[in-house]
Length: 398
Image (cartoon, rainbow, N blue to C red; front, side, top):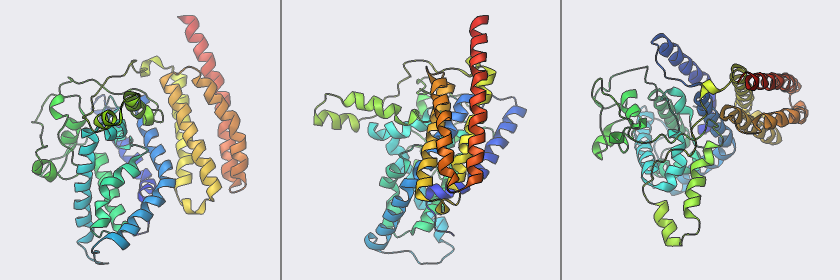
């Protein structure tokens, strides 16, 4: 297996993820089930792309920390070879995930990070992409048990990547499968993601249900069960970038002016699910032109991000930094259009006007990529005039 960190494993798996989402969309449409929302799906994918971009810079340090712990702290190390290594690593990773996940719902400080993953209205496989940008340092607190117990980084990261892909499929309500008595299924994980208070502290496992059963958090939904909606939705934005600091900012406001003891109490208290102050902007409120533009903008930005992530070792550091910032800004302005934020269109145009400078930097490394980036930016700039015209005609007709 190649020596890769988690972000690299996810990056190479992007085509498989995309195919899985497309398959789910096709199945849902054939069944005429409302599973995907336009804006929130892009928001979910935006959060995941941002996590991979951040992981580009954070991941190598996590990898070094893993190797250092494995080489200098672990009391013993696993053999270099053995068919049992990967299955054993998956089981251990699953246990670490259970503890990590349960802590994310038990303590307010961790919920302010993990809660980003639960800011959705519909459950589908794209929610599996709705990841926290602080996922690596946050998860390291729990998955650090693996190198301490002698798991090398290559085996460990591969096990975590496989576990992550399994978890992605567990977010898909249209692809049903049996539990076989020990596996987490979409129905089980879906109940955890529901707004039903019965499942608010249940079903934390990623792949195996053994930990939930062992620690009393297993609650398997009955066949043909109906979920209640007796807790508020915490979805606050369709911007996968702004979502990253929304709950953190709310927690920080609760800490303001408090004593150290009171701050510690708040950070370690159970989180309270609160609804948003303002309702989300619904898809039907967006013009057709805005939806088409937002989709094209996201696809273009995500493609640039994939270009950066794939074979990233070949990209000079300055190219990595400039491209990463370009991708994150593009994801943010697209989210602004989906949220119908004030000045969102102005921010988008400013971004596009800055793209020639980005293209000039990229030209020093890859002229073809630079020309493509510049062409897309100019085309998009023309496309924003359509958004203005659509907006003006809509306001006139009303």
